[in-house]
Length: 397
Length: 84
Image (cartoon, rainbow over all chains, first blue to last red; front, side, top):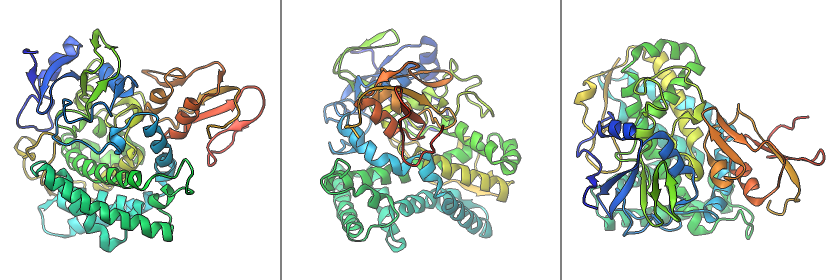
């Protein structure tokens, strides 16, 4: 294929949808693109196409997790990683993890998250202005939340922060990343051993099913799960919370109603999940395990498809006035693809929602005059091929 | 769980609990459909299969109920309140 456009479309990214996606939405067709690694893939960018690629079991994650497969990042996940698996292995792991992450299970940590939010915000608001919202709130909140859920003792939290940084730094070499992962794995193993001896009211303890039972994960699976929970539970929420404040402050008139009513805040958070692009190019690539029709295109067995959720979430065919936060959009929380969809739907979706709801309710209440120091168009995003990430976000109040 | 008694079951989705994750549709494509209004379970009784049990157990909103169509026997998550 010589007509494939180079992808991602821009070297530098921000929170705006690249204009190429408007053309793809109008054409309503899969597009050939050349990815940074592994060559040419199909790009899915309309709501219907992206949703099908995420939900249809014909699209495999394990076939896509190969060094030769087209992808955005140089990284190839270990085959035991939950994001590299398909049914039936993937289903077994999800069943083991599911009870700890249902909306009702996660609701139990809401009071703890509310306390963390209040504490972090008050600390920031009590200090000098302007302050860095990333360092003060968006980075520590997810770390403290997920460590609480996993039962990590407070003095050991920095171990998580250091490792999360190493994993997310796209400029380090594969060898450096593997070395950081190996040392973190040793730490996780020690944590698992402690929970085996002394189970607690935490996710790791709940994953230690009766030995030999179907629910009993292997040591390897357990470590990979904890790492996946950590990477997803810290990196994406931090990126989201920072960018979400930027998007929210495009419409500051929403802050008073959010302060007054938790349901309004939750509705706004759902819109933020729809509007904030986390990935630079989209989600994890899938490979078709059989010829499959997507729209009017047949994706052939063995061909790769990149689902661009952030673009699907702004498809005008699906969302009226797609670039604005509108209250009361129909369809409930599943109306957008911000948390993914299908078998790999974000396991931490309810936890992420809850943190964002608590944070932005509290911001509206405690810092109603919050504003950005730099205009949105002057914000600088960390260069990289995977995540649209602000290094810092200075705010006044 | 997979040794659950076989038989005809009725599958329902509580729209208040459904998060629209699409998990059930991915795991049991023949039993769930999705449209602009949300997720729907097949309206007629179906044979209980492993993929249906998996879909119910992986549901992040605990929104799926699988009830025996032949008697009052009710299968659902332990912490989900029973309904008459």
